[in-house]
Structures are given as C-alpha cells and as structure tokens.
Length: 203
Ligand code: TYD
Image: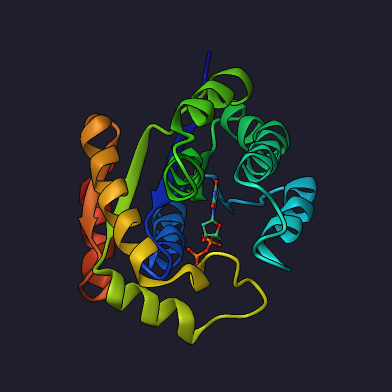
C-alpha cells in the first residue's frame, strides 16, 4: 500500500520543537513534497475543541485518567480526519507532539499510568511515527521560554521546574526505549543548527 511518511517532534515545554516542526515542513516542501504540518492536542476540528477543554481553565479540573481519555480521544479524531488521509495520499505528516507526549505527561507526570496509556494506544491509535525528533533542552532554559510567551494555556507550564526536569529525563529514557524511532537532538543551539541536525536525522 502506498504510504507517506510520518514524523513527530517531542520535547518539554519551550524546547523549540514547534519552530523545528515548521522548519522541517518548509524544508520538505522546498524538496517538492506534499506536507501536512499539524499538532497535538489538535490538528482536526474535534481535536481542537478537546484541546480547549483540556488546556484551558482550572488545572485540577480533570483527573489524570480523564485527561488521558481526552488526549486519546483528540488523537483518534486527528488520526481519522487528518493523519491517515494524508498518509494514504502519500503526503508527509509533520506533527508537533504525538503519543510520546501522552506516555510522558499522562503516563509519568501524574502518577504511574504508563500501562494504561500503552493499552489505550494499542486499542485506539496503533501507529507510531516513522521518526520522532526529541528536541532535548535544559529545563531552566525551556521553562523561561515557555513562560515568556504564555497565553491562556497554562495547564502544564505552571507545574514548574521539578516537573520539567522529570519530563526531560523521561523523554530521554523513552529515546532509549525506542532507539530505532526516536532521535535525540540537542536543542540548545541556534535554530538553524538544530534544523540542520533534524534534516541529517531524516530516515
Ligand atoms: P503544546 O501546544 O505542544 O505546548 P508547548 O508548545 O508549550 O510545548 O502542548 C500543550 C501541552 O499539552 C503541553 O504542556 C504538553 C501537553 N500534552 C499532554 O499532556 N499530553 C499529550 O498527549 C499531548 C499531545 C500534550
């Protein structure tokens, strides 16, 4: 079956991964590819609606389990309506966050839900990116960047430095768990240098 490529970007808040996702999309378009640049939570109408439910308002609004279900519901809609149709027509999908964020944020940060995250992923999502770029960054630098541009979405960034440190370690552990898929990219460099490292790590 003809199939496009699926790339994701991961990292702590403020790591610069959104900038890098956009740069990779631009690079691939310049190479003549049909590129869909998208993000999670979001990337389809329904998933953007769920994004507002989960990222805005009182941070204590949802239990960890409910939050996991909302992120997974958003991902399922995004998959059905945006990602799979693009891959089916042979496009490249560049996604700012995907299931590794759920493995980290819901699986690790709010109690040990990793087993549940993986079970739900297996049942409802079932695909992994062809390559995941982990933009690795010192949390003190990442947090400063995230806080300097915060809008209404304070859900996660307010959890602060301790969480960011655990997230960074967790993401690096995840890269060791999936060594064929996840490439660790040093994000503490000029954006053009980070982009060059990403391009060099394309499969
Ligand atoms: P994002 O818009 O990527 O924020 P940032 O650019 O600041 O990194 O993601 C919003 C938040 O949602 C982020 O703190 C991570 C969180 N998140 C989860 O907790 N679980 C998930 O499955 C996803 C996709 C994101």
